[in-house]
Length: 432
Ligand SMILES: Nc1ncnc2c1ncn2[C@@H]1O[C@H](COP(=O)(O)OP(=O)(O)O)[C@@H](O)[C@H]1O
Ligand SMILES: [Mg+2]
Image (cartoon, rainbow, N blue to C red):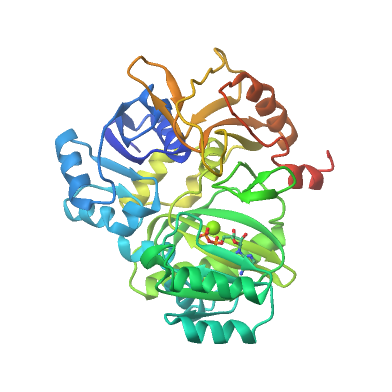
């Protein structure tokens, strides 16, 4: 049995994802103390925020030595790819998140495609290129639409779905010649376009043992009906029944098991979140990509869906002793509506004062992303996705009604949000 409250936690990150992880820590009986670095305006109201260059493993280790933290939760991919968990583990500090070797599944799309081919994980067929001319020649022989991906980390902006050959060639020149993503475009993956509906599968992995959280879906486009420019995500919900029992069976057998076995076979002791983005196609689920951390905003709807203490799960995984059988999920559905800053996803307004409701109805919570707490104590906008209203309900319809009843009470100049988050599932549920 777990002993009570001896974890002194440091959370790395500053988005809505990390705020929801902070809330999980504040609810956890395992946690005695929690700090965040760098945090945001909402996190500053609930915990001490510290400065650190999270991409620098030595700096993170120095901060942990200074604070005396004995457990680190890494939110974003950049510190994972930089080897922050490697440095902490080498120093005897347990941390939740994969080592750099595992983080390559996200940090290099070329590596992850090669991994999937070697371990027979269904995905779009693809070719990887390091030279522009052969890439151009290849693309001219393919049919459109075709997908062009910068292999390295590009903050969610490195993928172009080209509908014409001219567009595909322009994307290749941008990435490989103009280097618009810097070294992330040194290698480019060109892949087959897959038709279908996407879902996000968040796994909490401890070697070959794993917990599958409820399948979720997000809304990447800024406009209603999934129109307009791409964003980091304007909302999300879980569960989604696009993952039917049959799709789930195939997902586990054809994707998850071969992936975890493949990691082991490659000598990678994977412990942390593995986010499998899938396309549910006519021939079954296929992998779009792997990420090595929770999605944002998916994390904000998944933390409340766990009845078992998420921190206990993360600790058990970090220590390599996790067993999924004891985990309990909460029934019902959870949704998040993201409120974005004026101008987002283009040039954004910053520094607008945010007014929050004094009281929240049961089952509703507010999670901050791009906010900052000023010296005068006021919380102002400081990023594109400012905050999110999260609500749980017996059904998605109930969750959505709860969330949307609170959204208009959150006020800041220029605020905008989508009124149709969850529409695909609400249609499937027959309530829209
Ligand atoms: N092969 C593909 N077929 C169809 N759509 C794709 C394909 N690959 C990516 N996409 C679309 O592009 C989005 C971004 O691609 P992804 O591989 O997830 O890269 P990243 O999240 O790093 O930008 C996906 O969420 C999906 O909507
Ligand atoms: Mg993606």
